[in-house]
Length: 446
Ligand code: 5AD
Ligand code: SF4
Image (cartoon, rainbow, N blue to C red; front, top):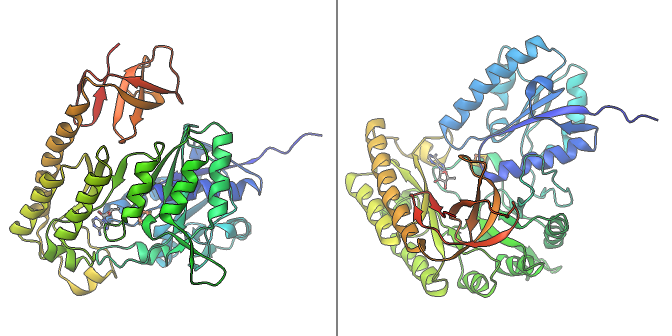
């Protein structure tokens, strides 16, 4: 008996790590229904774009890509084309009303429905479901790691977001916060350990508010700090990272768990967004500059070797030159190791769009962003210099982009190290001595 040739599924992913992991869930759901993943849209029976709405640019890129995929569909009318993820949620009507609309529009909580929706689309109807859920966590679905390196993997521990940052579209596209059952997280990580993985990153919009309740519905049965420790205890060979922490919720309990467990990586991503308390209030971040710095002091005290990275937004509504200077001074004061830096992009229907005027001119936003980027370049270099000439432990992840004789890996602090391959392979832990560095990389010679 011959097995039938699987149908080909092509997925293209934009946006955050959460989306990368969602695409792996989608691959798992579709595999159960006879689809194998492929790496070129030209060969696909079904092409899905997993989209991001966080900034206008992210959406513009997807619209551009959709035009190309529609052209492909004209050549191959059998190809089904779908938009999934945050843009599907936000722009369902627009995606369906276009002259050559897509066949499927599926929001982040409706991926279990995909097989049914694909059947509808095959029958010539539109397959649409953008309903958000209060419960869905895809808990028992084992993601298919089709694009990964076999060494590090993402594991979602919660979905949605209950913060109401005024600039942010996420609560509208991903719905309310819900935590995934702890046992299913531990089983998934155990499966990764058994398959030879060496690093997991626990993902959530705000991991510090992870919580599962006991049967009484009131007592917390598992907090994030407890979950993190349980995951770390599964294997000393498995590194554990997590993202993202909200400054208002990062507890000393968590920092102590990090200090206690060697395999929990010493890196905290703590988005500040701005250094001005006035702007933070307009952003509805629920902390002041001083609160933020107090949390940084706690990290430095409890975890002296921890690196700290952040997200910053330049040119939020009403931001003055003085507010901007406060962002620069916060950056210097913290001495960030790394940062993601953005110009404010107004998103329709968010609180900021409804209440405030997007009144910082584009050229001012751009200039402030370039000052932030330039300063971060200096800080990134400065934060790497102390590691030059000293042994650092790295987990090798693969060949470096520049040379097939060099491997690259990461330190616990999430710093990229490049080193000669020698007799090492991806997946090995090794100690190297960097001899020089750039703002982005530690470099070890033979
Ligand atoms: N404009 C610019 N940046 C944004 N972010 C979120 N919303 C916006 C927006 N409207 C940034 C924040 C967040 C990161 C994921 O994206 O810095 O932490
Ligand atoms: Fe983009 Fe946010 Fe959606 Fe992730 S959750 S895809 S960052 S809009």
